[in-house]
Length: 195
Image (tube, rainbow, N blue to C red; front, side, top):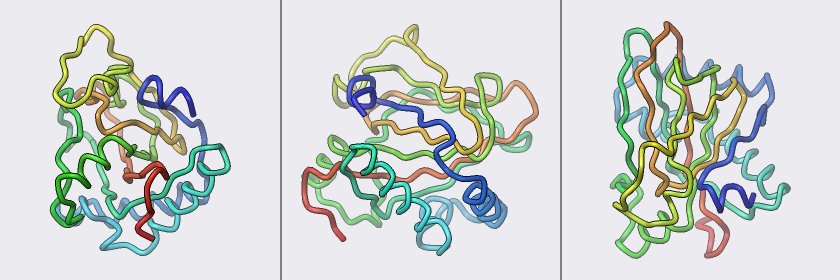
């Protein structure tokens, strides 16, 4: 997983099974009409999703990435009806329900990474994640160049890992499509797991 360390992101093609994808697609249907608070805390409202990320945790450990999942997981979707651009940003604001103090937040940001499961095919024209490689190495609120952007085309069942300090975003979709993702925050196992 050196690519993740160096560049701040890593694409894992077809990392989940077709059956797991179907389970997540069913969960996404139930979440489509849900309030933003529910979408931002899916573990608190669905029992089907957490075991999937637990399985990913085990798979990542087998691939040489010691880590553990946290309780921070949310659902995002774009469609013809919900088609919005997301400007480049870092994920430095963590939700209050995690009850983290300042030092804990700093550990999360510096030792953590997102695990993002794609439920649909997405490319530059259909709202794919875009990143600024290695921007996570410069810390919070650091300058970056949009000329260095990389679009992460991804298939359904692909998983993308990326640092919360990596500048990332997505464009408005230029074609009619769906873009649904579940995203869970993981920690590298360099300090005690809460489990």
